[in-house]
Image (tube, rainbow, N blue to C red; front, side, top):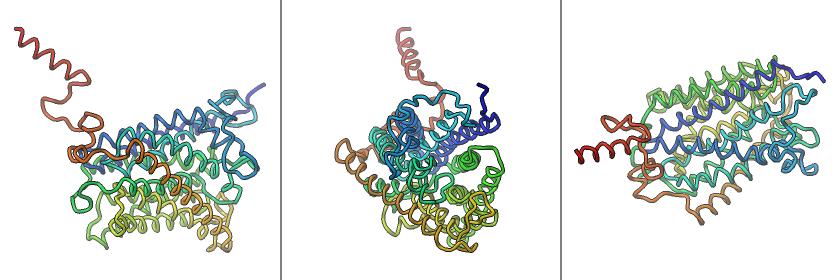
Amino acid sequence: MESALDTGNTAWMLTASALVLLMIPGLAFFYGGMVRSKSVLNMLMMIMSALFIVGILWVIYGYSMAFGDSYGQAGLLGNVTQYLGLEGLMVDDPEAGVPAMAFVAFQAMFACLTVGLIAGAVADRTKFSAWLVFAGIWATIVYFPVAHWVFNLNGDEGGWIYKLGVIDFAGGTAVHINAGAAALVLAIILGRRLGWPKTSMKPHNLTLVMIGAGLLWFGWFGFNAGSQIAADNSASVVFFNTFIATCAAGLAWLVTERIRDGHATSLGAASGVVAGLVAITPACSAVSPLGAIAIGAIAGALCALAVGLKYKFGYDDSLDVVGVHLVGGLVGTLLIGFLATEAAPAGVNGLLYGGGADQLGKQAIGAGAVLFYSLIVTFIIGTLIKMTIGLRIAEDAEVSGIDLAEHAESAYVLGESGGGGIFAGVGHAARVKQEELS
């Protein structure tokens, strides 16, 4: 039988998957530049290790939990055994249009990135081994089920949030609210960094932060436009809305900084970019370009203000995951209820377009359900890990630096001691021994 697969759509899906994968090192650079120099390698490792672990779990059972047919009609969890080990998905289905494995790969990147987002809230003080355990458990009992609720569009067998009619095009709930809520809980369980907030803990490399933000913006076009699963008009609308909302958010963050602090900073610009990307993610198929600008501007200003809440309430969210991802995800998800227009691909009118409050109510239910599920289950996971293997490194290790304590490495080795590669220590010892013998 001749395949009916659309090669253009397939090429776009594979490209979008690669773009989302690029977001993961982009996130690592973004977070890595924001921490102190003695913690940067650990931050890179936390994000990359989440990629490794969640990628493996996705193959074994994660995809099946998220995209298998629901158990019953509740839409709470996919059939764990349906695609166990991705069984049966390598066959070319002539009716599918896009290969199943292209979709599997695309969604795998979402899962890996979502877990990595949490790492920014617990920088400088988390045991690497405990992080690995947390990443695997959290992905299994939080992300995979929530992804089923939101992303499984398989009719009666799909997720309950989708069937309710909630609009979340690319993960405002499943990714950003989910990770932001988990970040808040984990930061509270871990406790504050030594010296916070009195000790200065400024970003050690703002150039790295800007590079990371640029890579995130670039990769986010795959994240959002790729969620259309086709190279068509809807993907084009989503692509442009993603672009213009981010521009608005960056400007809004800088204006807010200027009014509040008297300065418009590069860190603010980078953070505004990410806030805009977060907020437009659920709404990119539901609003016009003007609506996208409004969402970006509102999110940029509100997120810039929200990052200061940690000082008021006393939780140490190291890199403002709560202020950007939780708040930005809520803003974008809820504003759909006001700014959605039937002229956009989603075809729904919000309150300001004569659609009434019905859609806003649905958006609030979807956002609230993911928020509270993530809060509660993350609290249980974090508490159990803290009581068993422990979550936090020792105080002396935190003072000397988590990079040396957990990885026996330093990010910046200058002068004659640098550049030797992995066998530098062995080579040096051999040279010393040779000199002694001679």
